[in-house]
Image (cartoon, rainbow, N blue to C red):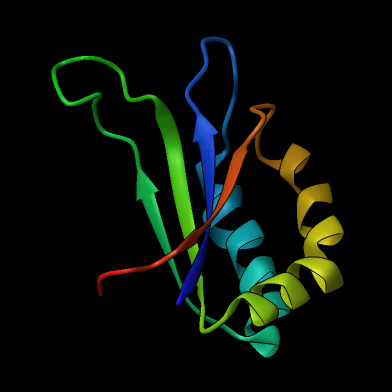
Length: 104
């Protein structure tokens, strides 16, 4: 299983419209990526840095695909469209990482 993780840093002064993200952006991503092989999406809202401090990331989303080909096919077909929507909910610059899941 391959996972693309998108992490939105909680940087002072940045904004993030959670309502838009959950009700518009995420449905857009799912609508475009599911036909290309996306199996699941999980969204995490940052809570703390492990202590009592501010989390490093405001939101982390993980999109799951059976194989790298499906993941890359989804990104090739629709990555530009999903990225173009980012300014509609945040001015934060996301960190993106592709991972291979080793343990389920």
